[in-house]
Figure 1: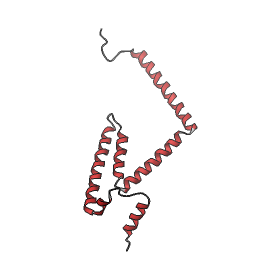
Figure 2 (figure 1 turned 45 degrees about the vertical axis):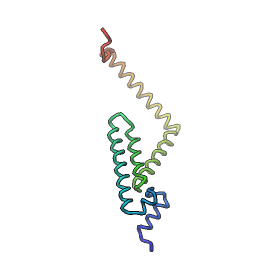
Figure 3 (figure 1 turned 30 degrees about the vertical axis):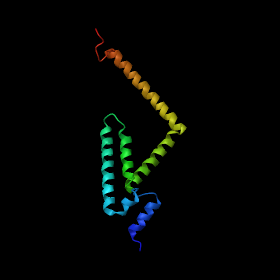
Length: 137
């Protein structure tokens, strides 16, 4: 007899989704729930560290995606989020390789560089060039 949840489990397995826990862990419901709780807590700690790194020096987004990858070893929702993210990153990379987009980005970066240089020149002419530390005088 096949229940509706068995059908979903089979469909998820066919799509490459679902738990990647060893078979002996999945065989025991209590052990599998403990395993999932452990994976969730480790993923949560990694994601939290990534969130802390966002305003601080460090690879915040990379660490957050690493935590999502930890979660994706056990949870279908995290696997789907990672698949969506990979698809969007690939699309963005392909779009960035388009010659028209690259040319536009180079023009915009050049304009921004000229504006920053002009503002720097105006600032130095107005206030002079003063080092923020003592130079020994």
